[in-house]
Image (tube, rainbow, N blue to C red; front, side, top):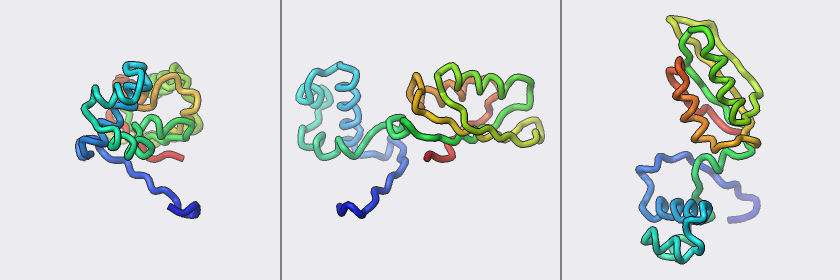
Amino acid sequence: MKSSDKSVFYLVREEILPEAIKKTIKVKELLKRGEARTINEAVEQMELSRSAYYKYKDYVFPFYEASKEKIVTLAILLEHKPGVLSRVLNTIANDSGSILTINQGIPLQGVANTTISIETRDLAIDLEALLDKLRMVDGVKRLEVLGQA
């Protein structure tokens, strides 16, 4: 790739990835968590060849790693009940998320569309875990990642 070429990134669901790519991600996680001391040990545990690992290791990573030190914009559908938005904001703040913008529409038919932009640099947990927590907040009907900057 020439230095003037830009990389293009895609968000792809795990179930359509080839096994070698899935195993490469798992090898990287084993190494990161200290469950394997060496690359050899990790690839053996995952039954992956070293050559496949080295082929993909610099090109695949979990979504939350791509989201570190980024601004992530979320689209959230909230029930129109007192305290729902407050609980969402508190959940983000409790995990050291920095809220940059909040936009909420007028509630229609008992729900309100809300967009929240979060800076993820200081998050205490990975973004996927935060999104799971937000989905569990009472009154959150739907949550989607709109984009990243």
